[in-house]
Amino acid sequence: MKTYEITVDEDIWNFLKSHAIPLEDTPNSVLRKFLLGNSGGPTQKKPEQNEDFPTFSVGVPKALAQILEVIYLVKKRGYTRTDATNKVADKRLKAPQTVIDKYCRQLNKKAFEIDNLLEDQKLDEFKSLLERKFINHRDVIRDLFKSLNV
Picture 1 (spheres, helix red, strand yellow):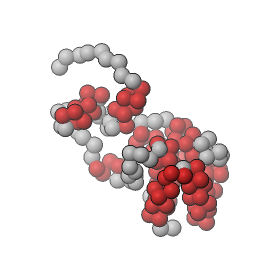
Picture 2 (cartoon, one colour):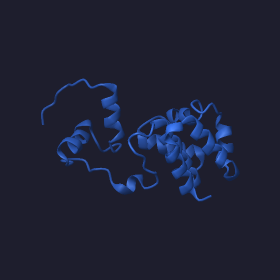
Picture 3 (cartoon, one colour):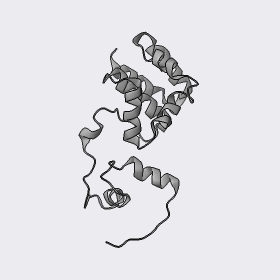
């Protein structure tokens, strides 16, 4: 294998990170999967690796997807908000603070307020807040909350 130094845009680097298996994939192995359709080295992502997570279409904003993933992990899988935040951060190769930013700063809430909204009797309020913030993605929000069955 030859070694080359290349420069990539930030969005390309983020794409590579979002499709990499942590501690297994390299930028080369991720590109190989997308360009050649095979791994030729480290294993491809296994479906069970993300079984705890709901899936969203490409058009769903990352902030909304991360918020919904945290909600799903807390309400459907029984994680604490902190553990759910860490799991989402690990999946997305982000720092937990980046995920916290999505549900605190962007929703103009403090962590204890998010904990309050995650209580069963407040979920409708949480759903309404998200529908107001992400008006073009109401169907995605409704579908996720419907899947919670709480």
